[in-house]
Length: 84
Image (tube, rainbow, N blue to C red; front, side):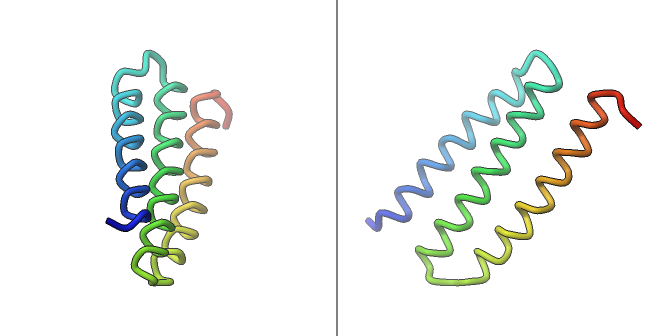
């Protein structure tokens, strides 16, 4: 078994743990942090899979996904803060 696939499997396990936190989070900011953690782990998984399969497209998609995730997290945090 390749070490990259083992690493991706561990990241998937961490994503599942973060999903539990997102569901059980007592407040909206807790859920937002869990979703941001999930997004970060998905980006890391895409990069790991890109290295494992030796495909650059996974890394390109991971970069775009990371940028969109960052902007979405900022907008949701601003909404939760109550700003315009």
